[in-house]
Amino acid sequence: MVTPRNSLVLVLLAAVVLSVPGCRDGAEGGKAVTSPCAWVESAAPRPVAGLDALAAAYVRVDLAPDLGHLDATQRAVLDHLVAAGEVMNELYRVQATPCYEELAHLVQAYDGPDRAALARYFAINYGPWDRRLHYEPFFGAWPHPEGANFYPLDLTDAEKARIQDPAAGFNGLTTMVRRDQAGQLVAIQYGTFFAERLTEAAGHLRAAADKTENASLKAFLLARADAFLSDDYYVSDGLWMDVDSPVEVTIGPYETYEDGLFGFKASFEAFVTVTDPVQSQRLAKFKDELPWLEQQLPLPDADKNPNRGSESPIRVVDLVYSGGDTRAGVQTIAFNLPNDERVREAKGSKKVLMRNVMDAKFQKILTPIAARLVADDQLADVTSESFFLHTLWHEMSHGLGPGRIVVDGRETEVRLEHKDLYSTIEEAKADLMGIWDILALQAAGRDYFPAQITRQQPATYLAGLFRSVRFGIGEAHGAANAIQFNYLLEKGGIVLDEASGKFRVDHERFFPAVESLLREVLTVQARGDYAGAAALVKTYAVMPAALAKALENLEGIPVDIQPVFTHYPDA
Ligand code: ZN
Image (cartoon, rainbow, N blue to C red; front, top):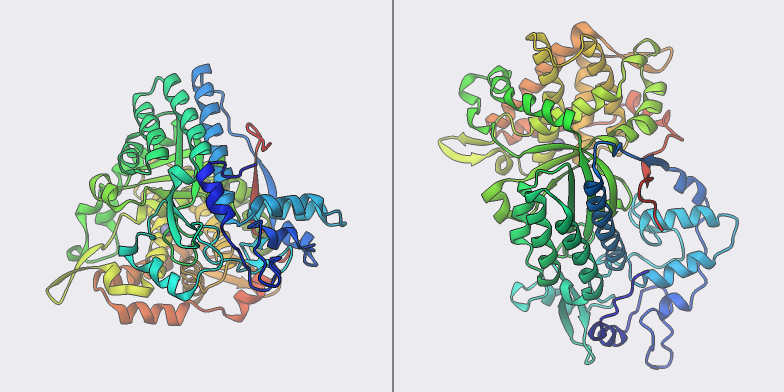
């Protein structure tokens, strides 16, 4: 339960006159509105029909990583980190949804037959708007405010222009924009707006710092606690890069996607994780292979990039608790932070892969997809281990291949030359190179993987293509997967069995086809060839009838998971 209890904020909020298009705000005949949430309180909203089916898109799954390797001190640290994370979760609700409390009360009071689905869907979406379906309202008819709750709901065009003017001071990453008593816009630092709860969160971080025996974690926690109230996150973002502890936390205001109006404002979130010591050791060995892999890439030597090996660190962890922005809607399996470019230049960024979230998605989504679309005799080759390995090598592959390039004697970057197509081509590269890396290491006689990997990796990759294309080919990851699927089908690496409607890997043709497409992709990158990239997208990022029909077969399979953190259940 959160309301900003800071007295200044209460004064400011009381002065806010909200009006949401399409709903009555209780102001009649020019009478002043007393409550900023009158638009909610005066309504008797109903859920949309078919809410059960909408909620069924998210399958509930227990995430209960093994904490057996932690000692009592580390468990106590974990408790405090989760408590701080729970504050992030509550603050994010305030940021995401105007009048969250009032809306939540209406959800609680609703007693129709679909009340359980409504409560669950409201919790998944952190409000009455469907994050998976373009923020369509599913409870009531209020349109989703593009700027979430970061700005007043009744901004005029002139005010919007003012907010975008950097000189006006409203575009800060960590401010809420409100109206003062005179109705003028003011920007209030998070440290002030959310003072009471952030003080509480800071207290938990300091308590954890007090207990931990890990110096790098302690330094981060103390600096982060200060940042909550000072709104200066720079130093603590840098210290987070150095954290090397079995218990870790990623906590604060990070991503700006929730601010759909301008993308200025950062949302609170938290990931509380424990590292996987076995995977981390294995990872260190994988990293040593990157220079060798760069040398083996199907690309002329002149286009190879021997200096790219030392990029971002990667960590493999299990998620113990998540809250806030990352918990809403579709769940991430990996993140790459911090976003502050100053920290990235000085120290790079850290990629964190969440093994247990990956496993949950594998069990609940990839397995049923494979059962419907992968040939029966190859089904046993679709494995959780291969799904994890592919994700891991996908991430590492972003650091291989052309980055800075020379085009017509001009120094430039692939990103600048490929512009709007960059993400699609780069994601296709990382996917292809991810599987190519594993098969190349295996072919070279390295002993990282079991012998079955040569069957398991392609079959799992095939199932993964369907999972990604399912989100649509209008977006970079979906388009990248369509390119791979259609190319491999054309070259015979993937074969459709007309009778069963299922697909199989042709193991003779698979690797050569992957390598051939990887060569094409790397070549358009090395040349900064926009026309070549566009041709690949135009030819292969399409939805042929066979693929569309396959996707129709996936109806009823959940789209994502709803995590239940067994060690730290929601109140
Ligand atoms: Zn990627």
